[in-house]
Image (cartoon, rainbow, N blue to C red; front, top):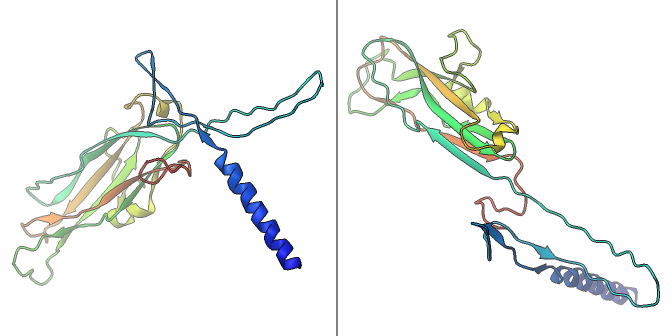
Length: 227
């Protein structure tokens, strides 16, 4: 008998929960465009929930009303220099400002690096001789406001394969919320070409990932609606 009671109670609870969820109504949202309210809009949704009813001769009625807004994180970005081509005449250490980030967002944005490594000799059908260096060392330095390369002794320079362990964050600020171009950063690199590097081609393919640190759970990873 107790089992039947618990089953009935569980069914009643589920009915209450599902019934309450069903009361959430998409009332439709309008967006102001050129001083005209336009609907539908793909940028906002509004749901109405809750229902109260009573009746008697009481003089005063206090009816609670809640208005809540959940704002997703957005981003606007521009990255220049997604391919770098070095042309080197003789051995030496050479630096260049290779990537410039421009970021606008309404919360913190993380920057991570993957796949970065030394430049590896591209297969050309020739067999390297004993002792030949088949890769070129490359170092990176990331940061804001670096218009010239950091000093060669600076701790900002990290080996390519350690760049993954040095993520960079654009923290939330008033400038971040303004038009694109107010907040940015640079990724410098320097290469160390040695005498034992033969005349051939060297390359590395890598990836930079931008992460919205405060995205809402109701937004899918691809930026579409999750509700």
